[in-house]
Image (cartoon, rainbow, N blue to C red; front, top):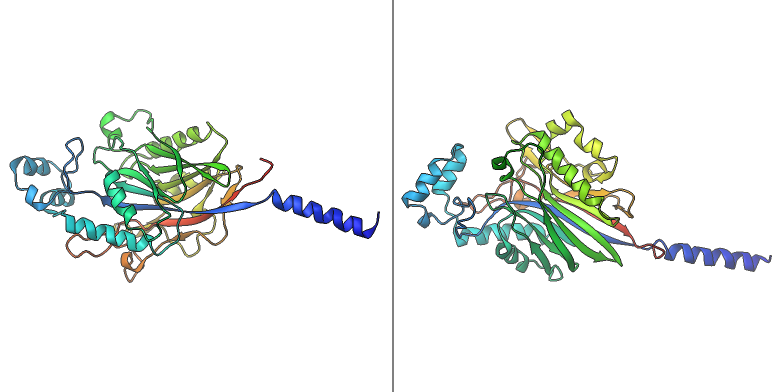
Length: 338
């Protein structure tokens, strides 16, 4: 065989191999925006805290607030003035964080309804982020999961979580798993947005939630991404090896190379950082994190001089949320033979 034919053979092989390894990137973010409510009372939910002060002087409201055991929550229910000006400032601050980054898909936690999500979406500088969804869930406070996407949303479903042995009153304080299907590079991608039970609930409830998530993923063979507020704190993770055990099947953002990342929330009571919020990719389905892209976003508007998150203050208009957002870029294989 001549040298020319050998070179031609290897050139054709290289072209064929390259065409079958095309990949496309998608940048995703999870952001718990902390109590993004409108100012209207929803009689089906316990959203009494998030009303204008002018609507809090009646006896029914005062009596309801007085039943709240935690003083901070009780005082907010009685005295927080959640008016349209405050809401506009809260949304404006969130938008400053979002507009500082190039993102393709955002999972929000603690958004009350589709109307407040629309208000957020309409303020984005990137007008290609025009697809959104929110499905009302069972959480008795009225906080939900919302999605904004650059890619058309083919389908979305809210899956309730089954908790073994948990009483109904405890389950009412939880959210389901929001499954969103998008099409990227001729591939269907199933993205699962979560807001797992809060830390004051037993660890078993969060483990049940992870188990429910994996059950959903085993029902198909598409690329699967999970992101959101998993509510696993650093102490619980150290005691239970939750993320380490999950890493057998999942690539987990902060274990994959989140450089100089302390966590997404600082807990003042014991002085610890936790990755309550995270991004995860189910292994073996043609997706992986792109190197050096995972980031805990510390926008100046949300970060104090010690690098700690600054919650939104309705009186001063300073701050954003008690969680930092986390983001990363995922390379999706669009293998033409598949």
